[in-house]
Length: 441
Ligand SMILES: *Cc1c(COP(=O)(O)O)cnc(C)c1O
Image (cartoon, rainbow, N blue to C red; front, side):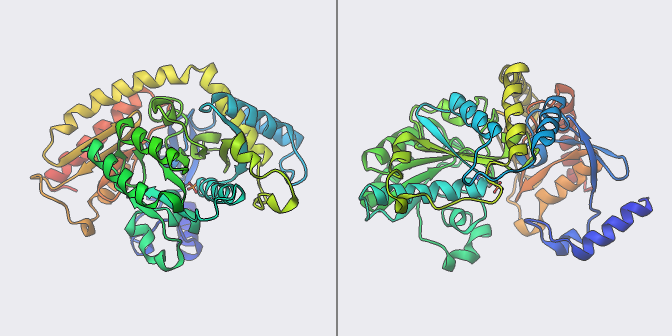
């Protein structure tokens, strides 16, 4: 039974709130959770029930909720100044953070442009790349290339380079026409796919501004994975054709793939790097677009060469303070060493799932996991049955928060998850799948 307060929250939520990526007809049929507090990898709802946050509050959690070091950094910043504009002024936290990001980023990315979401970080990379090409005299370059099934955010520019029909199709008449290149789903035919992508690239080389890629893992597409065997020849060829390279590491950044950035596992480096999500440990909306000094220099000179773009909350000091603390913790807590162990644990724990008839494919790169469900006899699922959704709702009843992408169950735990918690997540999913087989679900 819910308390009166929870019932009142539910009434108001149903009356006034519109949730993201949510079919409200379905929302109204479920009991909403109201998260009141959290600590580490545990969330607590308004009925004091606890849940393991197995998707890191949608891919943002790194060191966990209410980490004392991040809490303290935000409080200290709050005592100095919560917000000051970055237009015409600067502030210490943003300067220090830019310096730290440059230190840990792939070589040559020396300039940091702040914004407040992954979508805006991508939007900025697209506009910057276009303007840089224009101002270098490459005026015929007006098109972008992206990978099939790409997801780069929800603003109109980032949707234009997106390739997920369910999300993007309805907007097509409003979008600019990007070129979509074939891309492997699960390391399949990487050489052929790379060759095919290169061929398309060569046909359009002279009209292309930039190629945008989610390196190694296409997250929202359902954890589709490829390796540098696909990416390296493609990127190298794009470079030769004068096409700039944008890596969208909004999802893969900050340790998720087993290295600090996915880029660290790839032999070619981008001209732009987009970061968001884990940047502030999930505390505050902050994102960055990093680029090279070469791109930056294309904007120097007369007033009309300026990058005319900025957001009101650009480089918000509280966000920068949270990000600085987040980066500091990677060193202090040896996060990347612990992550290697967790990745091994995860692999071992997922092994039995691979043998199940009702699991088509287990995808794992680092701590990014997608489990493709199928029918209990291995048959294809009807997407309208919303099996992924029902499985995640059942896991919730066992105290584990998961969120599917279609019929792929996603796990993207905070990097600080304990082995015991991870065990619990996998056990609950197994239990739910068993129940489903027994017709309980
Ligand atoms: C989440 C995501 C985005 C969009 O970030 P928002 O902060 O939700 O705007 C962009 N690119 C990738 C790869 C993402 O996973």
